[in-house]
Length: 441
Image (cartoon, rainbow, N blue to C red; front, side, top):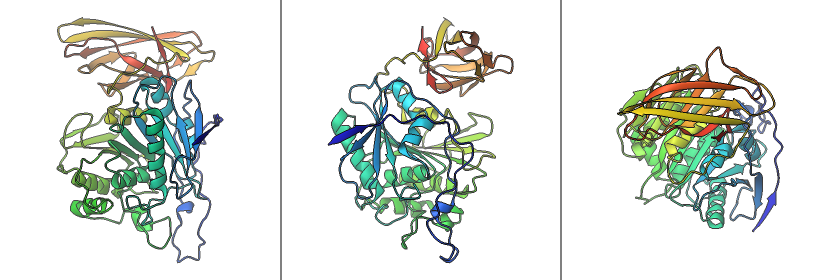
């Protein structure tokens, strides 16, 4: 097995969605091709510090000629978890690396990230062929499974902590991977996808207009049976699923969100009636099924008024919380970035007051900041000042107020909050500034 290191160039993300290369002609009964549909990219470039992205070749069975890119942080833990981050149509593994926070989060928590890269003309993943929708049937899922096996063998990764996530085509592949390989994955997070099997075709087409238009519906039992048919006879545990969708999605329309919920609640054997409903961010509705905590069997986030290009900075952190990787196992200390944070707490009984000072240690002015941090288990913010805080527990993002959003080089801003605690009154950990890991003092 050989590896070929390639340090990917960091490019700012286009602000306009790219239209895919045309695969099918208009003469084919007027059926839209997958390549004629715009696909999203992440909304902001996120530069991961420290280690570099590496291409791995000869990683095992790879019937559809996928490319494998790997990010192993300098802070990788013993027996690390693995996150498979699957790109959107027109994208690539390196683009997913550059434009999402997964590598930065890996630096903080010590897991490994696998970035599959499609090589077909559309740069979409196969989520429609009979081969793709069958365990071991061939096509892309087999290649991705080989990437996982190679990573587990090379880095002694923890097979009980393998996760999948993706955007659009990658979200559809996340559904497919969890259906084909329920014994491999612990959980998945799908951003703007469709249910497993919804995109199925038998004529070789990559595109299913009925599914993309949101007109394919089934009962929960029928959807569940479609998943179970991918691995007949399997009776083991099934991976948890988190799904995200914008109400104004015009590429993979919003009814697919409800069909995903029906499918995965049935697969996981939980009620379709939410156990908890909240709004962690204005315009978001989050429902949890089968449990009320951060690792419920199924979690669904609906974004009011948002289109297909829904992915934004901070969402990966919420998926990480759903995976349980922000607290499961030893987290290495963040490497210093272009920012520094000092935090203190003053506790009493079941309450505390925290003061957090953020310093821009870079050489350029920051216009608009979001400070991410992780609260100890049992802490919940009750009110704050100097910023808005969402959500109020675990992985929190503090967003600047109208009067302190500009932070010059070497300048500092102090914010604070009050919180309840259940015994652990420690200061937050795992600080990031606009997606870049901060040092702490």
